[in-house]
Image 1 (cartoon, rainbow, N blue to C red):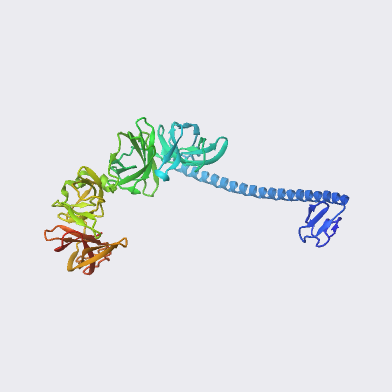
Image 2 (cartoon, rainbow, N blue to C red; image 1 turned 90 degrees about the vertical axis):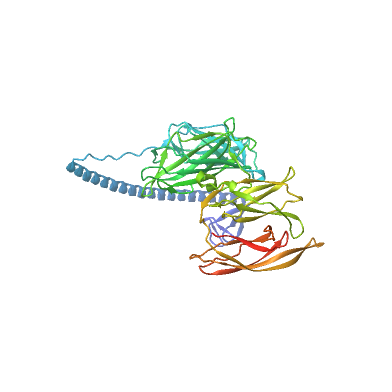
Length: 560
């Protein structure tokens, strides 16, 4: 190509986008034509191109500055018009209100100035941070534990801390976390766990308190305490369950319940904490709600020597507005450790918090003598039955852990679960299947806390009929080498709903009994459909016979 040195354009296409691509070589970015020039021409051309670029840049900068100037002028005019309108309306409003006040003799209203809610950050003191592991085993996560203490003399709303992590002088990461309470009262301390960089070598960290402020609106009021509270430990799991009651004598509605629970060792060091909310969003006077808080534990080798809790709450107006209630003496401390329960027990919040009058006496439950049996491959098993010996009370969600012994040696446990209730005189069948154990000489049961219900209780009445039984023989091939023969019974029948409402989620236990009435096998039927009023549904189940030959069939059912 050729270059027009007068216009500095490509001689082929007329483009002015020229680029130096080599010694004395220029390429057109538009058509790709290449031109070689002499040395002196090349130097002169390069100077000219630079001048053109500089002039173009200066011109673009001038145009941009002019556009910004015009934009600022327009914005300034708009702001001036807006301020003028506001001033006019304010003057008119003041004139009208002054006229009304003068006519009525009422004092003039004064508009309060905006309050600065910010608080100096140096009033939130931070203890020396500790690196801890939260969780257990391979799922344990590294965290930075920091305890913050409010020495500002004011209530703090949603205080936060930012951690910057370093490996030597190299900055690794930054993480932030809010304190686990919406309001930190003067003099209170609160722990916080801040995430750490995963898989990185952290040699030090720097902590910075983020902007502090008071709550927008709050009132002073009485501190909130649990009317009933328990700290529970099952293995490594620790939880607090508590009940809150609205005992106000007026019509005040309470809501927004949150609790912070903190655990301490015998040296007063924090070894765990948990934060949770009430199950009910708000409660009317004379009603109650409960809390169930899981507690993150670290330092598991250290025993819990003391614990405390604090409850935050709000008053709820009829309009739905909520006002936090402040109290500088709300932390309630208890010296001592948690109540220990077997880790296999399923402990419900309502069971743990039941009043004495609501509790079922576990002495009214009896585990009948175990029956020796064999499964379908001739392994040893034992059949048992749980009986409700009460004459007037239904036990709700009965449960416990049966420990088995052969002589003085323990041979595992069996968990009693799956029942929603057990009526007086009813028998709930249980399998005990110990491994490598030929006999059970003793059992010990650890019962869970259970509640009671008066008759007629929660169950909807059904009519269960057994219409036929058929003894059968089956076989099982084990490991393609051993074949075992076993006995079973095919039981058929029907379940009728004599009531006026639909009954759903029916569960039916079908039990085989020998001529002495002892249990010799059972099976749970769970696939029954919902039953409409006046209708019945059939059932058919094959029950293995684990003990002596059966002579009769009994049933136990549950409804929800």
